[in-house]
Image (cartoon, rainbow, N blue to C red; front, side, top):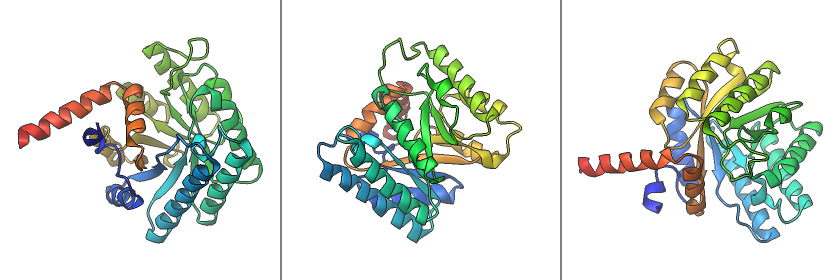
Length: 278
């Protein structure tokens, strides 16, 4: 599993992530760097992850790279203490603001949705405009959550949720993704269109056809459909690649397979191809 996941994770260190970002930037792609690590059990671990993000921001700034950061609030202590999480988040966002950079607040399972949106709105009300949040199209509530937001990454969603709060059928999730994207665009919200689904990419191109190119971007995971990403960049669209690094590669890899079982097919085809070439 570790060998196969290496294409989708930059590596265990920040140097690995920066090496990948340099290559992406050279191809006209943007990046968002994620420090893997959500299974924290103490305040010290949460503060250590926040410290790693400060290191990321400092290195990105020093090297002049086109990359921002993406944080998971459970990694900053959300399940331990809300005030601890708020303190860590404010430290990262404040440092990013001082450097002219941006922080994307990831969305996790539904037990965290309200608290995540609450902390995001607190930051915006405090004048921190260098933040954005993530919405998940498979949740039934998402269309209503769009209201009042300023910067959104829209994805399908990967966590296992009860049918009462989440769409389960593949086509139903797709349909809600398009509805949410149309609402986001209609309200003039900056949107990161996060998908590898060709149907949704084509629908997104239709929805943003008359939208200025600086009001949206496509987003993809490192190692997934890079050729399609190249095509979008060649077409003049902003394209950001999610670049995770760290030692917790197993948990991340399993979530990616859960999100899209086709990823297993991509991995298998790529591996067989390399073996046959050898």
